[in-house]
Image (cartoon, rainbow, N blue to C red):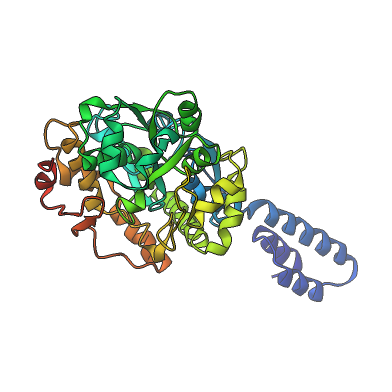
Length: 422
């Protein structure tokens, strides 16, 4: 093979520096310039043909709540970028807007109420069907029921006192989405107080608007996520009557919910999103990182609240307001990881939610429990992602569990027993 033939073949193969060195060693005389030109041409060809894979675009929605932190921090800490994901985090105006944007494909996934996919599927908060899928859980705990300061004599968690106060007038109470987590905590608490529920009006209000609506006199209480309970305390208009971890310890709260198309057509992208969120979840459960998280998510682009109002309850330090003694939670405040126990989406929890819908009178008949949880929860995908990340899968997917507010154990194999409870 002559030197020029060798050059042509080397150029076609996008010559490496080692090849160029070999050619230089073999070259001589007037042909040196030809060799140099060929090497440069080959290198240029290599640069133009060997390109990096462009980042994969993903749109994720969130509501201005503290528990959006794992999505925001995965973005801000570069965990999405590490997996070649170009994730945009888009603030949503309300939970109904989040639902619609997911279903219409305006966003691929969202920080979302665990109950929303079941509410939509059963027609309580949507038109039915299972267009929304639960990929993983984002957090446990960390919500609260706030009452106006005029009810301060009710104290903390006193169900009999709450009943007496509620019966003094026909109160209006707010939650955030029919059949969502806050709606469910509020109604469960009302059932536990044994108040005449026909005398209580329940309305939906977007989370960031809760405090202003209470200040304007539009309701006597609300159930919402942080930091809005803490903000009501700091502004002197309300007090925390009950935290949801004292209603049901380590209850499911927000989930990473995605639309059907994204789950079906981009499962590999979704898996990488989940892995980045898991990494952020682990970072958040190191309490030394929570001050940074509070400052980051407090920015107007995200929660738009003072970092101090966010940080206290993230650390488990609760000023309840109205002169009540403070409460401290250690390991049972808002949690994001718990060695992976948070993030596993349990079918038993979905069945519990739908049993409450029927118990509360939101559904007239029993829904197809098992079919819906199987269709909505992406168990196989989560198990694969967890295996890839070396995270243990809890063995309690369909196990009974206690709800401490009224000291009841729920058996997902017997939802009718729960429905029958007063």
